[in-house]
Image (tube, rainbow over all chains, first blue to last red; front, side, top):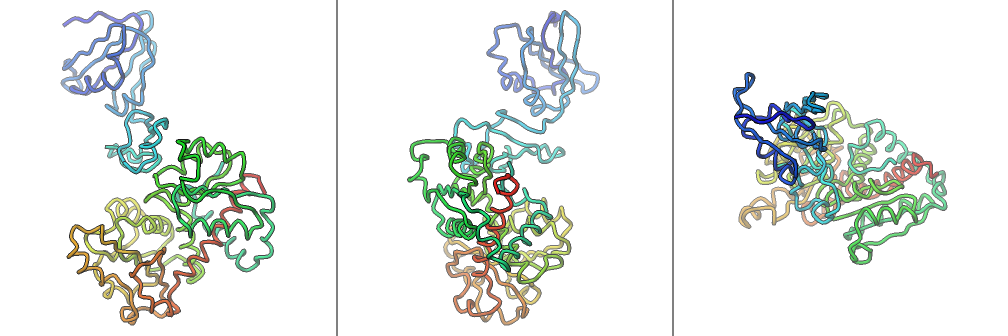
Length: 138
Length: 307
């Protein structure tokens, strides 16, 4: 399968095979006008299989979302056909408006304007807790 | 702007210093009677809690300050749909410090993020109630003189009792504490409190269903109410209820210097006959609550540069 190279845009690489579609939705890529390619089950030397997303525009993407869904992903920023920046995304310390608090007693359930903010409390178990009510992220 | 939302916002050193200030206030009340002259405490109580509100108000008055506020959401702008953030910004224009009680968890944190004055969490749902914990700590300090090496028993509803979780959190930072957790299986201390607080600090603990069995080894007995609605069956509740009622008979095997505590209100979990026992300290806790709130108001207003 051949996908054209990007001149100016972003390549999200080393996505765990099968997570590409989830990331696609969470990043809101379905709402973009530019070309976006989601390539699934690409052969990978490291992991056997991986997903890749190519975005043919220099748009702001949330590294928090990427890190939360799949830490270890690489984000390549491409300008004039050359990789100008390469970032390996780790589990973010804070998640803002990535996931919602589901605790019915949390203040965020009645105050719709509040940001939903979660803090990483345990990196090993990938546990996040709501900063307001301390409920564990599901 | 320093606020108090969670007891863990305070370091051990800060807690020790607050307790020392409270002890000094008790010893020298006159010295503190005008320190907050001209300053205002706003008590924003979005749900009624008469005792906590009056404790804060009495504390501010004994410091020579004034009090404004409301005692339920229906008499505030919240009933018109105003957000906690906006309320905090508005009240910051009128008062020097806020004490907030709110039924939703995290509301005082939201207030502190938006206020330009210190905010004290006076209870947010079943979540945090740090000034109750400070009252508990001051009571232990006054009765025992220290925290290190104490065997502290918690009895009753250890699953939902926020005062229990919060006090365990605070005490876990002292050395040599042993916890004895007395409850029915349905109301045991949640696994994450044992794992993340007690075990993480390397402290010994014992879980048991029997108050009588462990009574002789306790230095502190912290009673809580076992509520019927927490049980799956009425039968089970009635069967267990009496075993968690403290009476003079059960106290016969207790140490002579045991300290009996309860966050109040009490329903029937401590027999009224125990009130005459010199080891009963739950009404002293109420008084200590006022003194430690005075110390806290002083600390936060001083750090804010208001006094």
